[in-house]
Length: 260
Figure (spheres, one colour):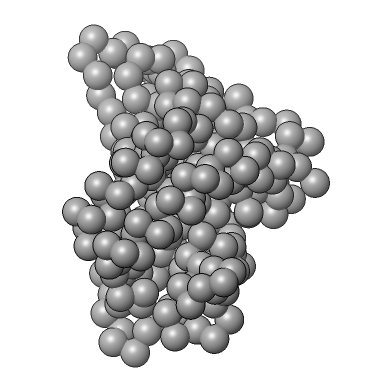
């Protein structure tokens, strides 16, 4: 997993919050006491940790079509985020799939992504609060280094990416899953948002982005249906934030909720 350049760094994330007018802490001063939780603002204000019995760290898998607003919503939540896009295979990997009838690499196929390593990173974050992850450059389709993601003992974090639902069943089996959410919107809106972002960030050439964008717009409803079949709940942004708050409050989904 460590690229030849060996560049590494540490990225520390904490739950962000602190809204004006929140309730004062209780006498124990313990983070996450039920008396201390203010249900307003970010999902990070909700904590499944009580003064008497702290719960283990769990993950919310946030998926949806490319350009559906996953990264923006994850940032709005105030929770730590694991970027699953960093687990893409490198462009020189011989196992990369091609778009049918084309020489383009199919970066929207789960075969272009290392699910096993992603699950290992999620599990390590839940167990220790730290993990080493690759730093991936989408423009060059390569891993440019590694970084240590440190979420400390935060009881909930988000793992977001277009393949998040593909690891829902495995995370459920390991007892790591708090929820799996798929953002759903209008395909035309997703197309415009995705193209603007990809051009702004210089991810790929314009012809490639247009070919991919039109293909994904036509396939978007099927993409969402696939994520639902894998165990994700499809919804809009407001409902997704509500589910994040519920998960952070300790109201985790049942063990039978993920698709078999």
